[in-house]
Length: 344
Image (cartoon, rainbow, N blue to C red):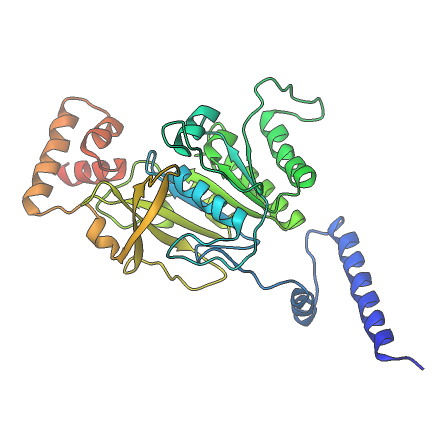
């Protein structure tokens, strides 16, 4: 007589057989084709994604955090990584996972600069959890012959860290280091494809830091503000941005711009607002309040706009390029083009 355990074993064998057939098909076919019910039944065996950093980033996602230069991407990213490594939420926000091993790839700071941020003037250093691994480029390493270039070697090295150090979460700070010209769609596509492959193959969660080109500070943040936005956004599961307050320069706010596992919780009418602070030996985003994005955008009255537009025309008459005009006036190059077009 076949008991229930035998049935379970038979079901498991069928599932494993289907998975093996899928693997064989994946090597020869462009598509994996299954019935809708089969997709759902296989999905049932995988855990429901949990919050890593509230609704901004879920377990198993490839997520992008982007902002302008010197706004605090690295400060927030280390704070998030520290939270995940301990399984302890950032104050004011949620985490649903237990402590995980995090590998933080730091292409921005030297070890001494990192030390300064997480100490009290190089004394009384903050003690990170052993789950927090930090990696930086080994400048003495030679590219092995099997890799065609440095970028290819770098991407393969991510996988080595996952397998050798059992990292479950990767934070890459930042994407502009990995490709010489991230603005090009081709480079963005190749990089994001590789990261997405790592994400799916190993089941790791990945947070990628990226930058925005100079943007119009009077307009809300959108996904189009991300450098190389179209390709990067296509391949990520979620994305959120840091905005710099124009009304209070020491304040920052966070806004979701893409999400798949949740509705948009932190939108223009409900953004968390922070102050960058170092209470003792840990530089961090300290939650202050929830607010509206419009309260932090650069405001122009009619006279301000006229003065700005006239100044753009004056600078253009001095034969300055649009990029220089945009930088001097703190507006986007697109705004400069629109002003000049209207004046023509």
